[in-house]
Structure formats: C-alpha cells, structure tokens
Amino acid sequence: MKIAAAIPCVEDDVRIRMLQHGDARAFATGTEDEDVRLYGHLPLSDYTPAIVEEQIDGVIADGLEDGSLAVLAIADRSSDDFLGSIVLFDVRGERAEVGFWLAPWARGRGVARKSLAAIVRVAAEAGLSVLDARTVPENEASRRVLEAAGFERRCDARTGTSPSGAAVTALAFERSVVGGPP
Image 1 (tube, one colour):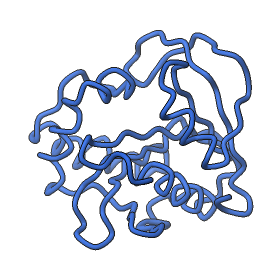
Image 2 (image 1 turned 180 degrees about the vertical axis):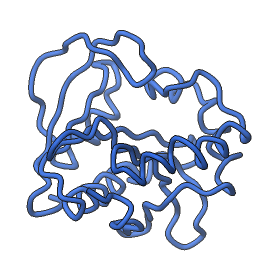
Image 3 (image 1 turned 90 degrees about the vertical axis):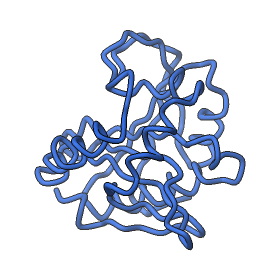
C-alpha cells in the first residue's frame, strides 16, 4: 500500500501534502498549544524545528516508504501555509487509524472536517477500506468533527494506549472509505 502515491489531495481550500522542512517551525509552534498538548497525544512531549526536520527525514520518510505511517501536513491551498497535521497510523490490512491536530491559527473555519474528507480519499486510493479514530470524551470539538465527516461511534469510552504511549480513555469511531467522503 502506497499512501504517498495519493498525496497531495485537495478539499476546497485545504491541501493535504507531505511535511516539508519549511513546516518545521510552524509544526513545533503548533504543538506548544494547550489543546494540542491536552488532546493531541503526540508521540513526543516537546518538538523543536530540528526534531521535526529529523523526523521528516527519518521515521516519517520510512513510514511513507513502507506504507506503515503517513504523518502529513494540513496546508492552506492558496498560500501553502502549515495549518496542522493529519496522520494515518496503525496500518493493518485494509484498516488504519487517523489522527489530526490543528494549530490555533487554523481553527474555526472547517479545516479539520475538510482534512478528514481529503484523507478519506487518500485512504481509498491507497487501498484501505476503513478508517478508525479515537478521541477522549471531553474533546467535544473533535467528536463533532469526526461525526460531521461521516465517522460513527463504535462503542462507549474504553481505555487504550495513545500514540504517546499513555493510557487514555477514548471514544472509538470508524468510517468506511469506500465511496469517498460523505
């Protein structure tokens, strides 16, 4: 499965594309946001531009090459400015999990919903059939975005392990990618 072959993908005024070294400062700054720290469950607790560049050249490039991980940029379609990140991970068979976070300057204009619509098309083109997603119950904004993007809640909150390795109680969602966005 080659997720990279389906990138870039545009939805309205949002472009999902590969992360670039030029995104490193905005990425690191975005991860300093209180909501990203609280709800993002990122693998590292702190990011610097140098760490982001190192990951782009290392684990991110490796994941894209073997199809196991796609850490992508959410960018403004016209300016190409970095707005956040959307990730396909835990790729197994025809399923993968999607996670996303937005920098504070990108919120409130439908960027997350548009990014999820684009990633559904990317996943379908890459041969996936189902996307899973999780969010903690108190993250109402992410829950609403997932539901607006056609994700359906699978079960009540359950404890599991987040990408950061922390135990977290989360709501589980899933969405068929057959047929594209809602």
